[in-house]
Length: 580
Image 1: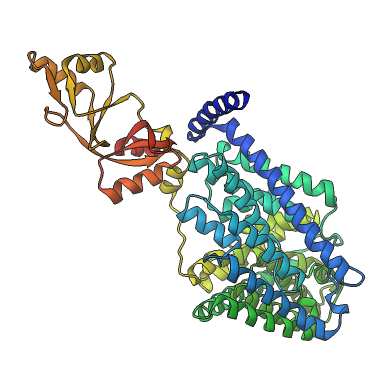
Image 2: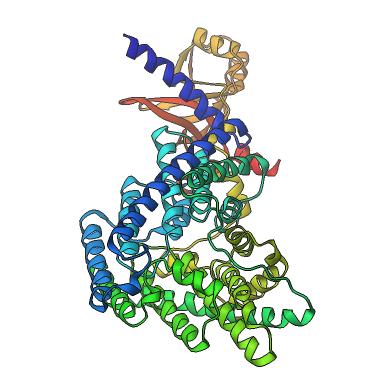
C-alpha cells in the first residue's frame, strides 16, 4: 500500500517536472539537471581514469606512460592485442555502433534529439580504455565527452524528460567531460558552445556551467588542482618576437589540414572493409610505430611534458611530428574508439617547439623560449583542427595557468584556424569524421531555437475529445466550457480538430436539432497527426511537413493501449515560438 502511494505521488510530480522542463526558460529545473549530470560525469571519468592509469601503473615500469622502457617486441604486440580485443568486443556487441567520441555526440544531437544508448556508453568506456592501455596513439578527452554526454542522455531518458531537456543534459555532459578530463572547467563550457553550436543564453548556460564545475570538483578532489603542465614564464618583449608566432600559426594550420585530410582519406578508403579487419590493421600500424618511435604510444603526456620544458633537436622533433601524425590518423581513421584532441595537443606542442628551434637558428631567438612556442602550438593545433579557437585558447591557459599566453595565443590560434579553414578548405575533425562515415552535420539558428522548446510549451490545452455524434445537451455543455478545440474521433482515433466556437455557431443556427454530427456541421476541420509529449517544436514541425497534417495532438501512453491527450499544436503556434 505504501509503495503504491509513493508511486502515485511520484508520477504527478514527474509529470509536472516534464511539463515545466518543456519551457525554454525553466532555469531552476534545468540547473538541477546540469548539476546532476556534472556529478554523474565526474564519477564516470574518475572511474575511467583510475581503471586506465591503475592498469598502466602496474603494467609499465617507473610510471604509467613509460612505453619506451618496455621491449620492442611488447611495443609491437600490445597495440595488436588491444586491437584484436576491441575488434572482438565490437563484433559481439556493437550492433552497428562503430562511430563514437565527439563525432557521435554531434550525430545524436543532429538526428536523434540527443538520445544515446547504454550500449554505446559501455562500448566507449571499454573500447577507449583498451585502446589507451594497449598504447594506441589516441586521446582520452573525446571518450570522456561521449561518456559525459551519454550519461546525461541516459538519465534524461530514464526520467522520460522532454527532448529539449535531454539535449541540454547532453550539452552539460559534453562540458563536464572536457572539464574533468583536463581540469579546465571554463574550456569545457566554451567547448560545448563552439563544438555543439549552441546559442549563448543565461538559461541555456547556467546548467552547463554547473555541470562543468561539479565534474571538475570531483576530479580536483581526487587528482589535485595543480596545472597539468608546468612551463617557465615568458613575456613578449618586442614586436619582433611576434614573427615566430605568425610563422607558427601558418605552420600549425597546415599541419591541422594534413591531420584532417589523413583522417578523412584513411576512413573513406577503409570503409569497404569490415570493422574487425580495420582495427586489426590499426593494431599492426600502431605496433610498427611503437617499435620505431615509442614516444607516440598512448596519451603521450610524459613526452608532451618534455616538449614544454626541454630544448630538443629539430631532427627528433620532425620525426616525432610525422610519426604522431601518421599513428593517430591511422588509429582513429581505422576505427579505434579513442580521442583526437589529446594527439592534436601533442602535435601542436611538437610544431611549436620545432618553430622555436628554427627561430633560434635563423634569427637568434633564445632557444629556451621553445617551450613557450610549444604551448602556443598546442592551442593553435587544437583550435584549427577542431575549429574551436576560443575553447583552445581557454584550455591552454587553464592547462598551464599561464595568462601571459593570451595575446600571442589569440594571434596564432586564429591564424592557424583561418589557414586550415580558408586556405585548405577543411572543416573540423568531428564534422569530417561524420561525413567520412556517410553522415552530415549542419547548424541552423531557427532549428536550434525550436529544439530548445518542448511541444508542451506551445500547445493549447483548452480542448475536449469527442465522438462525432453528440446530443444537444452534450453540445450545450461543451459550449459552456468555452473550449478552444474539439478533437473529433474517427474509428476510435483522433482524426480532426475543430474550433470550439463552431458548435455554438451551429446551435444558434439550428435551434431544433437534437443530434449534432461533428463531421457534418459547417466548420474548419484540421487533419491531425500525433506527436509525443517528449518531442521538441522542431520535431513537431518535421511531423507536420512529413505527414501533411494541419495540426498535431500532443499525447503520451499512460497505460498499455491508453494514450492521454495533453493539447493541440498548430503550425501557427510553432512559428510564434521563434518569431516572438
